[in-house]
Amino acid sequence: MAATRQWGITPPVSTSFPTDKELALSEALVAELKEQKNFESTEDTNKRVAVLATFQRVTVEFVKHVGRLKGLPDSVLQNAGGKVFTFGSYRLGVFGPGEPSRRKSGASCPLCSHVLVQAPISTRLSLRPNT
Image (tube, rainbow, N blue to C red; front, side):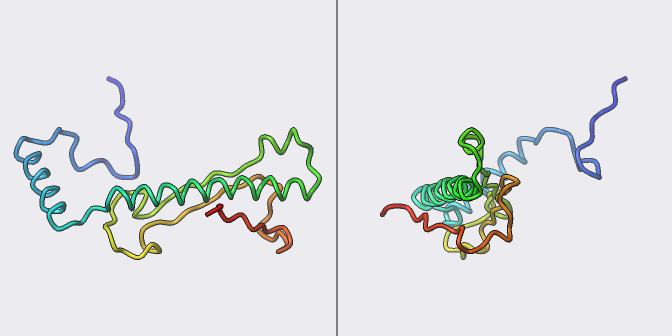
């Protein structure tokens, strides 16, 4: 008999599929939440996605800029970059409209090793999107 793989420290509360009653209750809950306007609009979601895409672009440009200032060869700079990861309520999808942005999400940006947190202020860029 093969061992069942366990994710996390504790086993799941249940491994059974939801019953028809549970599915109906879930649908009723979603309908109630929609009626109370607890979901972010498509326009707001698209704006958030665009902001995160800009943040990703600026992160990569910043890493390459620091690399150029340090005299790294173009072959290294072509592969240099960073990655924006979201976490918190935004990542979990458990936020509603009108909440302050500071409560909706956080972001972490692991960068290439040549970029130090202590990089001088002179390496900072003005990379605002063209508006």
